[in-house]
Image (cartoon, rainbow, N blue to C red; front, side, top):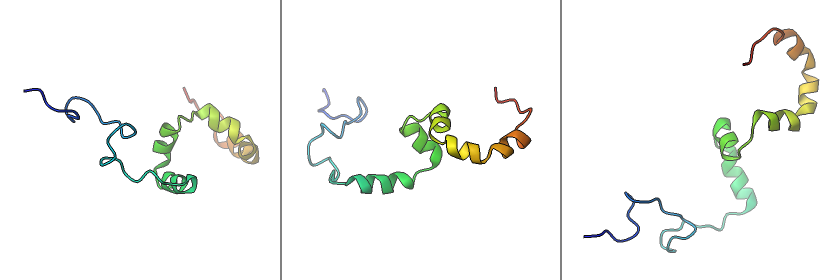
Length: 81
């Protein structure tokens, strides 16, 4: 006997195409989404948003400049490869 769709063992459910009884309340505002994202661990958030180390350095160049002395003194000679 062939199982009826959706069979959780065969394929994941796409909540955007799932019947409305399976959908959660999708009426979150942009601010609600941001608040929920702030509760995630930083590493998970970076992965979800697909943010690379290069993106961080480009975006936060001003903070890197503020901590220039730290990077010169404490990271000199460090091998990051």
